[in-house]
Picture 1 (cartoon, one colour):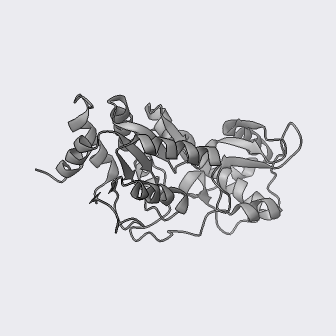
Picture 2: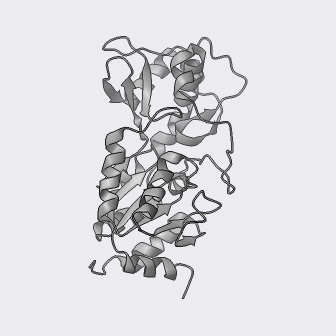
Picture 3: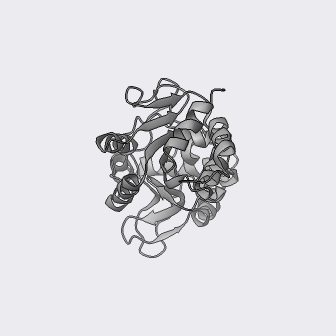
Length: 278
């Protein structure tokens, strides 16, 4: 028996999983995570919706950092965790994959049943008319309007952000919606926004069909994800986790494997794929 055996045995007993993933699944793809092993912020809290819409300078700062940081997102490719979960879905073990990440890497790896709980960073929406457009088109316009910013050195930050310090953002030129002239925002759920009700409802419907909830690479510190742990427990369904470090659910897990999530899920897929799902 090795450290991964209890995880495989659990899934054999609970073959249909609702899977909830977090930033730990994408660190292997070069996308930094938000929190340390104690669940604390590694940097300042992400942008809040209320500040974004109310403060023009805050919007300029957001889009300047995003323009520089987009190169990290654009070159990111699915990592071991993403591929393993796609294999588990193909083998019939994943009822639904719910991700708190906004990078789209689960879909890129081949997972078909995915709810992007917090939206997708590769899409931009207009807060006035609601039209959506690809982020890559906005990136081209940002670069055209602000050519001097493109080569600025910066450390990669989570979700396509970049640590640009001690810069004056006042002259950064942010385009408006080409349809109505409205304010553009990444099509993601900022802090201070609510997850759309239809997404929550679809997850709860899938949870009712599942045998257990698997949390992979998430500290669960954000309630938008932790609510599904509460839902599973209320329905009498066990919750297990694969995560390095402390999580909000440590006291309620039926099993917790404190291992690197990519290696653990790859080992799980290697043992279960090819086995018949009851």
